[in-house]
Image (tube, rainbow, N blue to C red; front, side, top):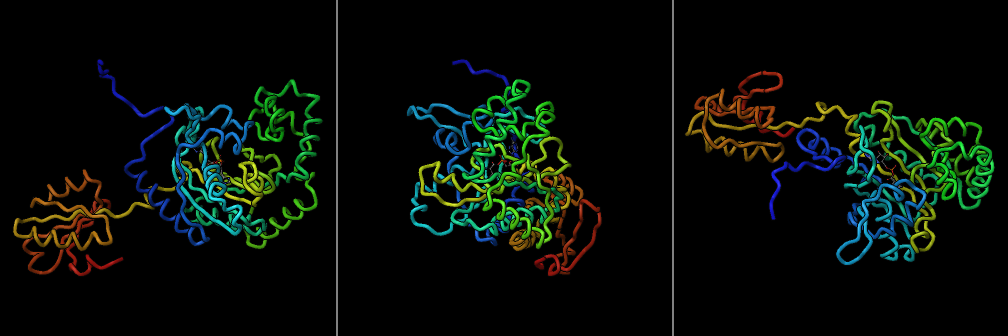
Length: 413
Ligand code: HAM
């Protein structure tokens, strides 16, 4: 076989996470995980590859994800499989597979990892992207809806990200069907003027026409009946209660009765956190209730609620400089200071990211290597420093130089 000499590049809509972005990425995972754990979540990791039927039955046949965006193929054992386009379905599959629906009780999991959707790539829209998500089973109280919203807010606040919270209620199996009927009746007079996607959605899940991005469709739908005016008593009082809890906790929100989300499994509460600073792909996080999803996947009816944050979109909003961690370069100016430099470095790296340089060099040479390594602090030991138990420090960002006591250098911050 002849090998091609053409350079191989990453696939369209997929990218490496490296350098400053990877520092920020791991910093995000670490801190979002800490916050989720405080709320009682424990970590779950599900496979990247699942049976295609899982997503057809959960995310739904009417969704763009299942219709157009799946990385689906037949594997060598003739199984119809696909790379997960989202994280909820796998967690619910686990819940049902382990018969936790029969066991009863409450389960709370968080996860993070890559998701795959064959979308048209643009700013903020990738084919491989990463989500941080949480899923809750067995709690039907609307206080949990508020709790989940607070958890996302806490993560976004931690990273100093401004947002608008959009909120809606999609109703339940009692009130949603009659709303869908009203909507279809309303649409029937101008159905031919709606886009091709909307015409498909009318047949599969009519409420999805409400959040069509096509401007013409939006203008035609301006007088469409509002979902929030058609809720049954129980959904209405839950929605009122949720708003009351959010008001009581000073969490601002906007009601958006056209917010139906791009996945078919939601009922009652649906929400999105959006930012106006990242262009047209403005949703940083989204989620809601999915009280019927366990049933759709063959389990016993169990309440569920969750969300996922799009990590790449979130990181666009975080100022990289603010989260830059120290990277300390430690070196010796003379051969006979090497042992001491090595020992100091071993101590320093207990708490700080540290590079140990094994060859003695001049100040200038050390600075040059440190810069190439992206270190921001250079710490050097020479004869004088060794004698006085001090260390020479240069901050490569501010250019400040000073000699400080070794003890001070090694003190934990
Ligand atoms: P989703 O709204 O499809 O929900 O995705 C959640 C977030 O993932 C979005 O708000 C966005 O930030 C990010 N995202 C989605 N697609 C892309 C893309 N192509 N490129 C970059 N970022 C993207 C879900 O996936 C649900 N599973 C959330 C959920 C969990 N609902 C209940 N539990």
